[in-house]
Length: 428
Image (tube, rainbow, N blue to C red; front, side, top):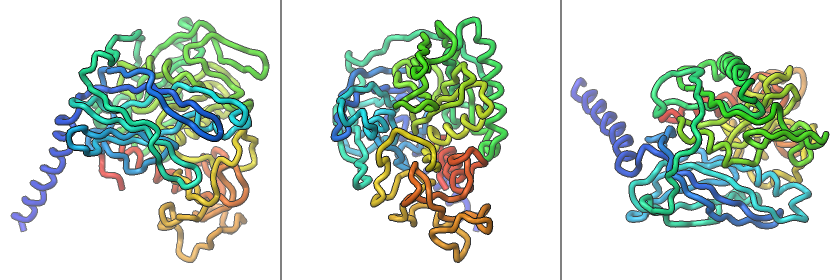
């Protein structure tokens, strides 16, 4: 028996070591940042690379290099050129994807700058950008390009460096989620207020389930990038401010939708700090926020509902959770095709419910589940979600992703799975 156990331990050690050494064989512990444009309208889109940058830190997974979830409307894949093997993949969302479903996109063609990061390869690779087709839910190639990591055309110049506050530290970035707060609309004179706000948000995060279970999996940083003016744009009311990240309310004409399309400014600010996730903290008391999976989340600092918005938007950007509300106004047109199973883990069209939370339901649960008093606190399949009242279903009557209540068991499971993935643990 001892011999068998010794063999099992040895096998596990080899597997673990192989995962780490495999990264070291293929990659430098740095980042290859790919700035690219998405160009299109409601009917079609294309992609073009704008710039490649080498940056000094890679804080993402080293063993879990192949994305087990493939969430998002887009994904990036990296292939070793000599062998053809897939050596890295990751899904993500962009604000451009949402814009394509608005009325404006029916009459205009636009170009939006985006950015995606992969570990810096040691040898020539093929980088592929793919888009998810909304009609069948599958990924299709938009762009494929060979990249030589030794190319003189890769930008290696240093960028502006800013003071960095360590708000919470659990250990090496290699095995932690590094969440970076960026100050939007905080002037140099208001930076002490930013530090105080970050501490409040950090406390709120680890007081919220399920994040309270994984405090030791996070590092939290604050990069003190000053703005020329306080606040943010409120274009619907004629208010415009000179700020570091060009944020503003009234995205797509919705007063509460606070975003920025300036991804370059965000990535430029975090170029020299460990960064797996970004929260842009806006110096405002107005209600609002936004979040794009594997890009960034944003919210205001001092509204009554600030902390709920923070965790809600982090649910989008960190774990790929969908909005579960269906009565609030949005600018999107038919954002989900009801004949396709959505990729988000917390909503379903019942096209492929087996892939969602069916295995978590109590025995003999009715599908769909009636939204009545009897089922108010029971995990089920409740109609309404993803901005529509019919044809899309959510796990609970109430949830952080619907009405800022506690995260439901399905959303909590999705968050904890993402934490395991990003910290190089085995995904359960």
